[in-house]
Image (tube, rainbow, N blue to C red; front, side, top):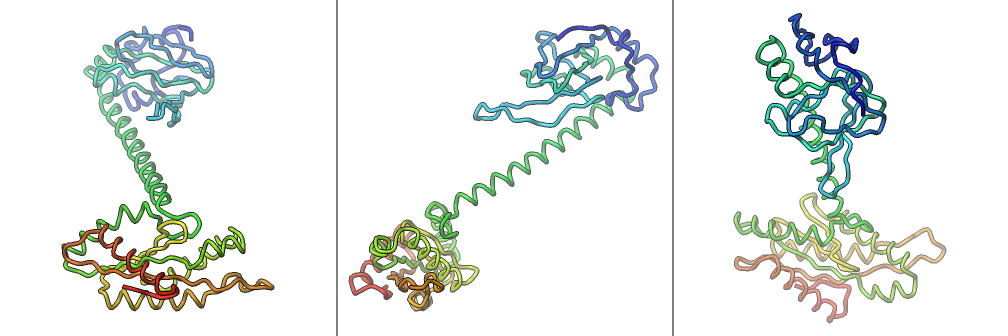
Length: 322
């Protein structure tokens, strides 16, 4: 960085600077004349030249990039500051000196306007306060738009983290998060809710005989059976390993048993890789059904469905129990 001259001797004028857009007061350039013009090299950080006094930096030539430090101490790039644009107005208004986060993209000339002079310009020159507010509003809208984009991206990745990568069903984390809410809603509205725990029969043996890739294919087929047979208001979950879960809002015990039987029948009919020379055997599953009662919560519902599933397996598998 070097102080190359004053604004009055630099050859630059205020007419192309956004802060002075539409300002006709001929005294502006005279007020700016003593201000320092700095030249910083490409990739050079802008130093604090005014100690504890805030100031506005106006790009006369070149460009700045503003970096913000994220929570993980990683730098995140924001928009460019181009010729005619400025930065630091907010620090002048709240009389706080921000930590330096600016770097030159190329060799850049900067007009430095001290806080005291900035306030003098605001008080004495018509139009500058308006331009300052306009710039801050543009910057605020841009910041809000960026926050909305980040929120959307964050929500996308949050939703993605709730999806099982193999089956595309919801995963256990999603169920742990959502089931208590659905149970509470069912209690509040006095609506039924049923849950089905599902375990693919002899799946370890299937993996041992045909390999884990074929086992993954069988899991995807089983997930497809659930997705195809359920209502849009129902939810299918990969609970873990070869265990699957179905949540049935607004379904009483009779409806839960009927859905479980339908899934059981369709599961045994599903074909894994039907185009193979030697098709893999059909996949069967055991089903345990439980329906929410007035005094039970989400954990009780899972426990009761799991107990019913155990009874189905004890009775010979490939069937439902409740």
